[in-house]
Length: 546
Image (cartoon, rainbow, N blue to C red; front, side, top):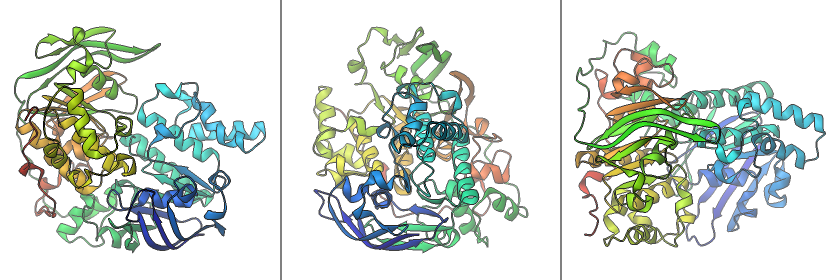
């Protein structure tokens, strides 16, 4: 039993609480999803379950948290680790060993388990997460998604009765995400493991949840109950739930199977025959690029062009080469063979800092690039580093973080830090914007703002290239999808051509209706619900030197 009794918590240097009077019970063997906007306290609640709040973070703690009858304030997190396995939002900050196998064995070894028991647990965790081929790899060489699976495997190797996971699929490709969630379902159903997940991608976890705890922006409980009832109250529900609400389907569908059954009597969707325009002039051209990390070839003879005024989604499984390709486009990596042309000129002779004036890059883990004392100072630092004058206000407005200008980035949620980093790269008004998993940690409102912003940037001629596992984002935002597999281009075309009918990358709508149906607006009778969210298009894009 997990018992939260009037849990209230405020971080150091903060004047407002992250959690406010949370009272909730989670039965042994239950499956609870914690939802809510960025900064609502989801991560904080999970940290309270294993004692990181308040033991590690400090701050002001009120109320009680009991896990299996143990008061978490009276036990250190190291001791609670036997009971609560914790997987944080940033796997980059959770690993302590160099090799994958050693990382998974680290926890059981520290608890003094027998050697044969440690070996058994490591093998099971490797197999459960499908990462046995990675066992001898250096963790530093892994992709973000591969590292995320290693961290989950390390938590599972402890065999705790409670698993608390903070956005455990945020960096995983669709197939890997389904595989991880399937493992959690097995642990929950077969072993009675109590599962508590904080997640923005509710389409993935609502079907498994027994209960949803919805937090508001003030850190208090807005709603708590069965998934269908709470889903109906969400401001930004998943596409399938939005469709069910718009069409009055009862019961509200949470799975594609349920949606397909309810859609049987509907007329077939009428979808546009024309694909998005090809865009303007070529800005970046990749010609026969090959790259190797040590003995591993991560890009194999890749050729592609990227044009003005387009949004391109780079997709593919974890380790397919998406981040590696992005880092070639801005000169962070240099090819072993082939070349990259920027407006017809080979970038081989151009220093990376000089390229940054034209080609901006937002990495997968934005926390690594935030080190100033305030949000405004972060954006100002970027302009100064590039030798550009300018006002930070427009970039803060476009990224939706103007209200956070005086805050310390270290005090923000992952989604908020993501938007701060986006503001920093937008400040120079780059001709090319490279984004690595830009929706990681974003709530529904921030995600809608991002989509509108990217379309706005494309409308004024910016070339946007984003690596993403978010098929719904690619469907509504991208003009083109470039699919990588084992470092090679395996598909390249408009979203309707690449995503529809795919076993892995089809949207919820396509899985239900088939054919060329891709997004909600393709469905007869659907009227998109407009939410009260400030329109990024009303804010003029920042102009460097203004």
